[in-house]
Picture 1 (cartoon, helix red, strand yellow):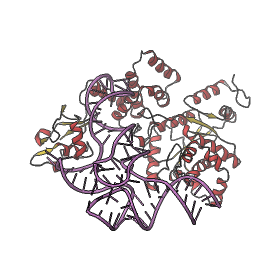
Picture 2: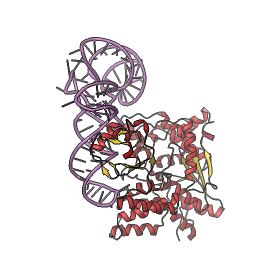
Picture 3: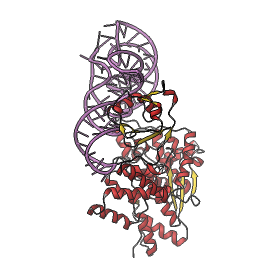
Picture 4: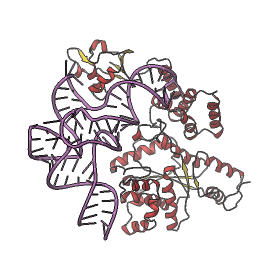
Length: 417
RNA sequence: GGGGGGGUGCCCGAGUGGCCAAAGGGAGCAGACUGUAAAUCUGUCGGCGCAGCCUACGGAGGUUCAAAUCCUCCCCCCCCCA
């Protein structure tokens, strides 16, 4: 039998719950606190209040965001209370975590729109009926100056500068605004407001999460424990998944696109993706890992399975199977996709029934400019009906183009009407 | 408040009157090779129907035949001192 921090005996089902919660998490602090909380919660018949704060800074959520959402959903599944805080107020401040520069600040309207899509998309992972959904503007916006000052008094400048990204920026003579200093304090105050028992976040949030503990104590509350999950690496295999790096897979990406993006990840991400994104059990994950290592499970195959699984999660089985078949068709059998986006041949680019190809490609949105189109053609990246176009200044008759399939690079297809 | 250093293309960064659409690197894009993987190699990387022209080196003016480079004012950032 295992013991919590206080030496309390943990019944085996709680021990199992604890183990499952630890799966796919990085730091669970302070040591042993969570187990104690689980035991106590059980004894008192009071579910834990599990806080997750998200700033609606991006219009869409991607798989990177779902890692922590899944963890929250897991707590939910064990009967705890998910407290989801939409940081409508903090989004206007801008979390400096992991940033080398100050974040651009968003307008209230943008935040509102983002918040709405966020909740909509989070519903794909969380049971929203049971979520306690709040907005931190509700308590942060009305704070008076004396209350703000009380909050700032809880923390020293030296403590702030301990934070890795601040320290780095300070050392490199990069600006840090006072506003950014405020961010961790506000996030900590959220914990006070919702009386969190535990707060979840990515590993980059560790400092902020711990700050919440200090602030709660300063406000006379029992400090929350914290649980961090790894940052998901994006499709480039290097940087964390983020819209601004263009290495993300959105939960609302259409099935085909989602499938394709998963296929493009480097091999070393296969296992982490299985572990963090699919809800696979520990045993399943180990199996994948072993198979890959032993060479009995081909990486390309593993990625197909992974992609299918993820598409199933967000679009259903049927869509997933279709996406897989389509993928094989285009990239294995090298055929055209079954469904190609269609567009009318824009008439404004016609001149006496003929079109200058670069202009057509631009008009139809396949490339950004005529110059780019010319470059791509010169490099053999443009095809019409599977035939590489050689002439940079090709003039084509409209009749010839209607019904033809334009292809730019490997993945951009368009059929003209 | 005083003194000093800076702002160059998506990012980093060289460039101090013409040879600068601006070196070099990274990212991106295309091609080859593959498993739409990685690695590698090649090319490309502001716009324009393009051997030419237009727009661009924080902003606005000015000097000059010629300005990223010189001058004036303004904006922004960093450091030291207070």
